[in-house]
Length: 145
Image (tube, rainbow, N blue to C red; front, side, top):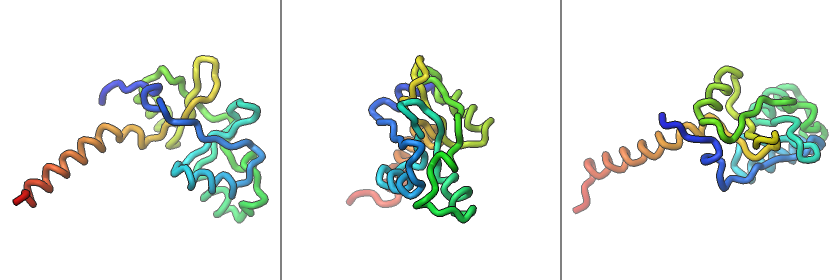
């Protein structure tokens, strides 16, 4: 795997976040509309937590909590581990593997949240190669007349 730098991966991607008072339902609607599976939770522009689909499933749904009345602050992972944008993606993947999670917030040199990476980001180059290989195989199986 090449040494892809996180700042290059998150470039052009806005940080999608909510505040800690947001309801679970509002957060889930935001994640659905943005087609993401994790939100940074901010309090006055400071990262205070992360909320993921896994939290919605295991803490809210399985816990019998009302998503319209439960604040994100009650079910988020507080004070999540972060990774600096200048680090290689491989470092973020190692942090995720060691911590047993699939997303990690990215911060700048001052500690301000600027993005999020997921284990799926590691598939970027591999997915491109797979798509090319599938296209090549399709051409071999069904050549153009």
